[in-house]
Image 1: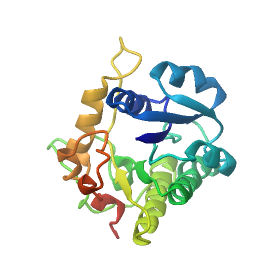
Image 2: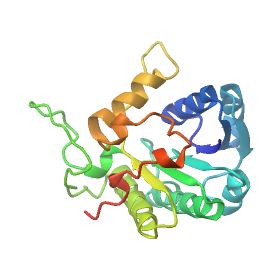
Image 3: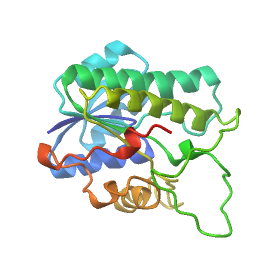
Image 4: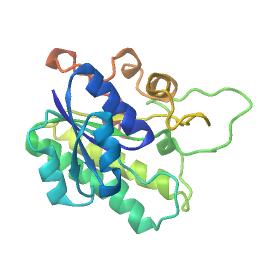
Length: 223
């Protein structure tokens, strides 16, 4: 299966690429020029461009069967306008590209969409797709933009002409002695703690068989 991955040089995206390549899929990555060499080393074909550029999306997505959209501004100093451009509007372009190619779309969201306190509570807390959204503080550009991006994905899901899933990983960190965290532990632990319960039982990457396709309820919630 041919798959386009954005954010392919990032912590999560790079391991998605590795897993897809290991499975034998043909992987393409939409990357900035500085990241081209990194994704080539991972075994993906590189299409140089910007996720905010519609033309780059058209070139990168041509002929693919699935898109994994992991690109985002996460934790860095940026203006609200930049967060919206990369985290929200680029997601809108991902939806348009998937629709144009009749490709499955997997949107990498975040547990940040739930909002609430960032502090670890004294009592362990488990959140899944039924956990109610909390108000997001105005300065939290990341959480606000990721929730807006999910709104884009959810709206696309209501059209019923697109197979789309939103996945909400928890915090992924890398060992001090490693350039990236271990792919299996990172990808498996994220949905097990915070994502769709059905997704925790599915394989990653998703199998290509239409009969095994799962539509995550997180992508169609109306909260």
